[in-house]
Image 1 (tube, rainbow, N blue to C red):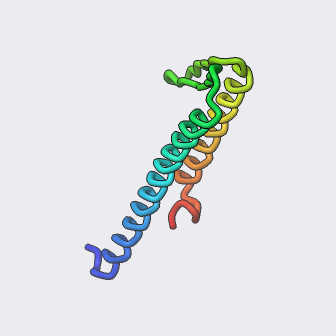
Image 2 (image 1 turned 45 degrees about the vertical axis):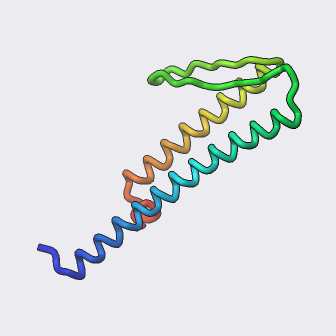
Length: 106
């Protein structure tokens, strides 16, 4: 059975981890909102009749690249590069969590 001090230390560790997850979630949420606002503002100020869009849809391990507009190649290429970077970042952070490095346990 854990003593009171050990319980307090364990609760503090769990609350720090929860606080980090909440901070990460809120940061991502506000970055998405800021990106949407930038898109809306740029469309209103510099809107023309040629929309550009590029994206990657993952269905399991299979990526599907889609794009529309005059700059289709560049937007699709940017979408592919960003998706590869996000996968690499996910795998690096996942490995760091499971190997028990000091940064992941703080």
